[in-house]
Length: 116
View 1 (cartoon, helix red, strand yellow):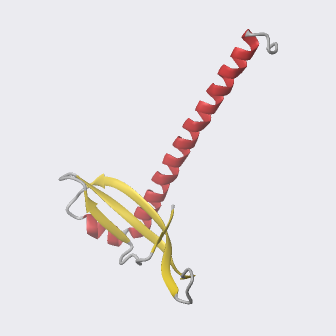
View 2 (cartoon, rainbow, N blue to C red):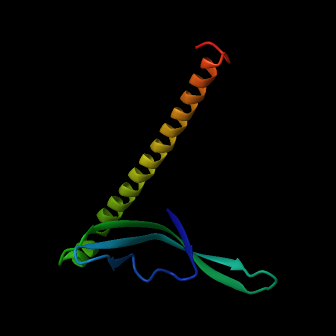
View 3 (cartoon, rainbow, N blue to C red):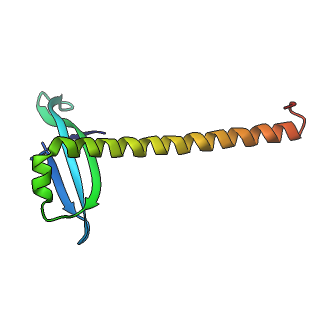
């Protein structure tokens, strides 16, 4: 997903400890500087736009080494997990819409609105 911040990420990833077994890894990529003109002023504000992905994984003693040595693979993994969750959400919404339309059709046909 795209993110924007007034602070530039200081690294390609950040690790947050959730509990003794799990961590959350946030990935930052394609960081671009963007200058925005302040309202009612000639001053420019610098912000940063970047791709942002987050995954929850099991903590391990060599996690930082793994992330540093295989950053591209970890980033692709996080992107794929995000893409899959987006597909599942969309599929659920589409299923709900189909069910709603089906119920409407059945109700109309029962009350003589039209023949199936």
